[in-house]
Length: 507
Image (cartoon, rainbow, N blue to C red; front, top):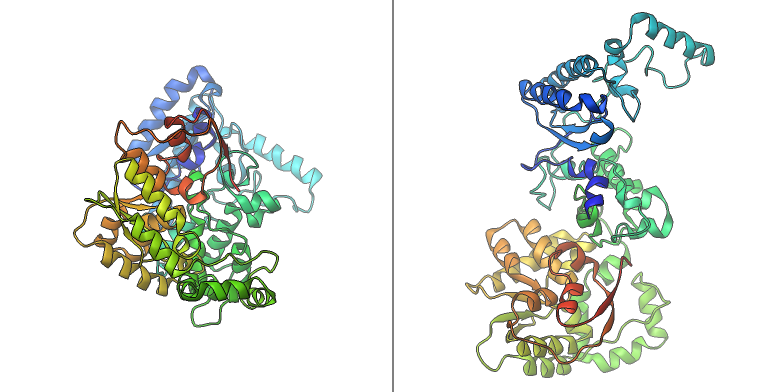
């Protein structure tokens, strides 16, 4: 955990405590380690004199200081401050016997400042050396010799404030600011540890990584390389393999939430147009599955035969897997009647669309365990979190579904809302307040608990479950991992007496 702080330093420092952004530009100066303390004292004074804040993150042992600074590169005044600061910072590090670049090289960011460190004669020799090997100036023009101004090619500029359905409350520039979170650290390109990014781990392709997708969205917002905005097929294809698992929102050090960006993009991309067939078959699954429950036996018989494969093909769903059997409404009613608390209920058990449609026995089991743990529940079985409409980018419908759910749940009741299905719990916890943006939605979200979270926080102190196996293999749901970090099923199982929990990481 301690080493990860170092690995994630650049990303963690990109967002300041107050929600503001910090930027590179002076992230690589170095002095001899014995001169570091004096240099840092003067460096902090320089930051203060320009009313800037810098977040330092390494490598002090080598005297090489990485720092991200809250420059304002989007405005002319901010760029002027940035230029003055960098010029004075160059003079300061040379005064302390140091170098502008201790690790990364000078490049476009510092080539103009080399005249502070080297004599005109030395820079002339650099130019002559380069001309010998590169007489036509093909390699890295405008870098080191004959450099361009350090602030000439800043890509940021004034960003458009896009009209979006999600509010992106944590990003000042809305969607444009959200996709700008990615600073290229590349934790999404790892092949072990954490759960990010499953599509990259499967393909090894940059455009299937969180970073690759974020860069595509940044280019779309700028409108220079990708000129067709929300209608871009390049961006659509890059997002296609994103599983909307939300792992990046947790494992990415700057909190890139590609699942939300994808939902917003799909909403805008297909606005007023026909969608892929799977958006209808899977996006509207809570509605169609509810209808199927009224005639579950004949529907299931049909789906087991050739008709099932035909319907799957028509719905844009793979034919290599059998469509799961629907539960009948009668079975659901019987289970839910038995699940209702006999006395005063301490919580509300939210029976989500998937549990109702396919595995209602989970609701009964959850209710029995919670009652045994001292948390008797009343069931709420006629509402939906809107997840399938969000993940397919049908956000207008999602908002309608969510608004009805919030209205029903925000009725003055402050009891916890326990959701057995982690993806639905995550949608109620995060997507609902971010999409609706109302105080009522916030109140509902604050009450949401996963099953593991409820047993961790609400169970009687002296509760002990029936005997459990000594060893358990656990697949933690990606949405539970990402959204309910402090309430891990593995920790609960160990606390309840399971000696060894073998937890799978990722898909």
